[in-house]
Length: 247
Image (cartoon, rainbow, N blue to C red; front, side):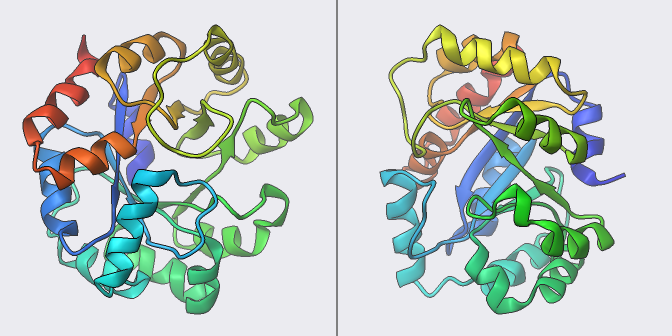
């Protein structure tokens, strides 16, 4: 069993923290684990992101200017002795293509990466990369949005492992003030369509929003707010946000 599946099997409601892969990667990972996160999603900085909002874009540019690459991220992850929280890489296709699909998948396994999210890789074109990831027992996690058609959603469900990443906004990542009832209806529709855990992500930034989402899904993914709090060294506030899944 993959580490993500094992963790979620033991977890009622999950909290997935997104952090940028930067010069403080190891320390930031340790902070998130200490504060009780279930899974850590590590972003690979990229020059032309399509899914990231202003906060994560700025963090990515800062990491790129510091010389962070996909290879250096792998090297740092490899040095983390115990991955209490399974690691998911969120990257775009070009860095993977440049490294080579087979080498990328093999390096994921060797360094302790359990899952991969590639926002600019269409589900219909993922077969080649998925073949190499499957061979190393690395899960390719697919995003579903409110605009995904019923037919396409069903096809994605049939291949889904780990968790379904249910996007709660029509746009890029970043903090939102509130969510409409349509979001909750969308999450419930996805949850009824699959036995794979459904994680709500994009735009969630407060403890109140976490508790609002949880009745309609199996967990939440918080990105921009976590990136901001890590930069400000506000570990206590991260802990309070994560604790919202236990309320």
